[in-house]
Length: 331
Ligand SMILES: NC(=O)c1ccc[n+]([C@@H]2O[C@H](COP(=O)([O-])OP(=O)(O)OC[C@H]3O[C@@H](n4cnc5c(N)ncnc54)[C@H](O)[C@@H]3O)[C@@H](O)[C@H]2O)c1
Image 1 (cartoon, rainbow, N blue to C red):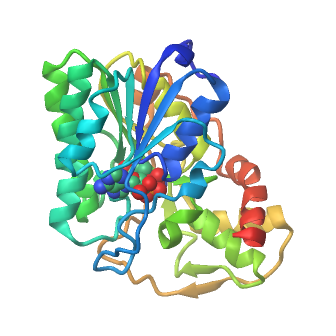
Image 2: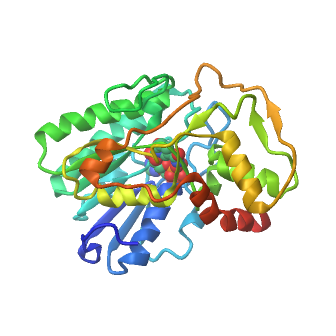
């Protein structure tokens, strides 16, 4: 799918976090649609190291890149000498996806350093090489807000706070820099190549695997009323590509514009799999730091990026379900 008339075959592209879920999908987008595009993936990859919540410090996995023909660099965005290696390239576009993506990490110093401070280094690098910057922000910036438009942020965890601080920094740079800078506030993303995010992968995958293994889907109590804006990976890729040459630099929401419940996810998967099994309801342990409702206001994304989501929840799950079946069989 080609989303605009940029000929990426003549371009050099950096994808930080390119061994992760969204970054690896971007890498394959270029490989499949623009085989001459020079794609460099920069990622810390995973090790056994964990944060205080017990989850891995980084989720990048080589298997997300099996079949990728571009160049890969193992490096840490917090490490000056690793970033130095990138300065010899003359990138046209930088897709900055590398981050602590786990919203439940409580280690504040490393969260701010990785998500905010390293971003500043990359912004400076982008300006030096005249590369347009497209970076991952998050709907977590809205936190406790009940308005999902730019300017109504109320983050309720350090992850959401760090993404909001990235946006604030980006606004400062937009005022003074010649490159275009676009922050994309992804809502809840699901789709191919998310498996290696372990427990932090989307509930679409987790419910799918529970159901395929013959178990009941485990939902939080009141899940028919917990509604979020679930967005399929292909629409996230669309937003990234359209953000390469925006009508205006800015921070934009990336969602469907339609909140759906967690119960809808389970019902849709059961329908796709033709499974009839009762659901199990458990108390929600995250109350206080949990978003009960999100729904992207995509009016600015439509206007300035010409972004138009193509997948409803039903269509996204339909497109994804065979991959969930494959994961259930082979891991
Ligand atoms: N998936 C979602 O629903 C969602 C929603 C909102 C925002 N985001 C943001 O989108 C981006 C991509 O998320 P994802 O879902 O693909 O998560 P992911 O964890 O799969 O990808 C992040 C990648 O960054 C790498 N990384 C982590 N720390 C690094 C470091 N210090 N140096 C270099 N690489 C490092 C990881 O190894 C991983 O490959 C992140 O910035 C995340 O915060 C994701």
